Amino acid sequence: MHGEYKMPGGKLVVIDLAVRDGRLAGVQLSGDFFLEPDSALGAINRALEGHSEHADEAALAASVRNALATDVMMYGISPEAIAAAVRRALHGESAA
Image 1 (cartoon, rainbow, N blue to C red):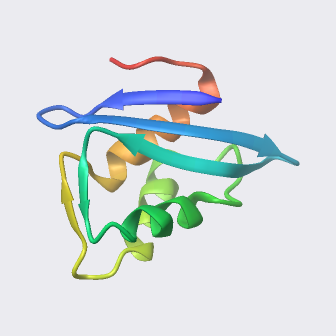
Image 2 (image 1 turned 180 degrees about the horizontal axis):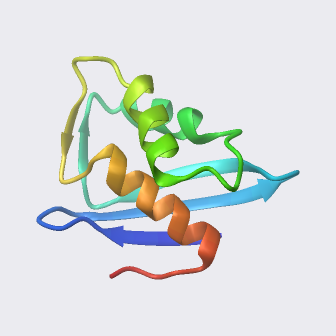
């Protein structure tokens, strides 16, 4: 599944994932945003893995936020934008 979300005033957030047994699997975040350090990308992907396919945006954003170290800098992206892209992937919606 593929979902995109254009964060207002920010960048394009893209999520590719699968659903296995009702859980998010193979989550891959990409887009034209910046993260420092680069290792934050893996932490975000791992934070989303295993969530129920019915998790709401607030729960997904909280998981992303909790997975990130305090020194992570996000440019043009937010936990909420990531969660919106996940929900769009699950509902087959494109960027807006």
